[in-house]
Length: 240
Image (cartoon, rainbow, N blue to C red; front, side, top):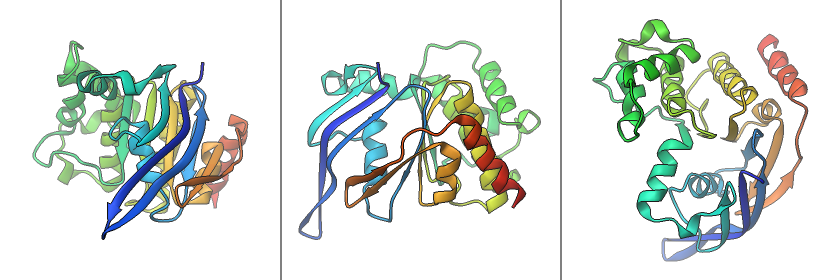
């Protein structure tokens, strides 16, 4: 059973009295454990696609099945629970609470779950991204790369099956961006499905599968690359 199945999905918006078709008959299947990079120019529909995959928006038509379940049948509460427990979000802007220590930022998704030992789970997530010694630091006391690591820790604290990352390296220098990609690659190696929105074709090589979207339509899907090749691509960029 595929993790993600989109079939003939369409989504339109009204902008300046015009109808913009953000997604136009999109069909896409993503298997559990894949690392997929979605590329496209500004306004191509990448973020709309991510919002649909993350249950933040619903299509006008077509079908979306997540783990074999038709998401259109879920109530608002059920959708919120799935977003909290099964999906981790990482954004270009870190969305950290400025006056809250790193560990408490990471704990936030746990507040809405039934998990116990919130601090212990948050510290475990921070350790996974190499920030165990920064748990008590405020965001202003952390570099941009460290803040993004906190955001990744927050995304994975509930041990989600799926990570959706929207331009996670966009506000970082190239070296720090590659460090973030390395973390995502490691999470994928542990079995987490990762969907990365990016404009950088070099980062797509790290992901292993590239899907290009233009004017709301998928125009390219290169398929899956061996994980060893993806790791080699990351290594080559680090050494460059």
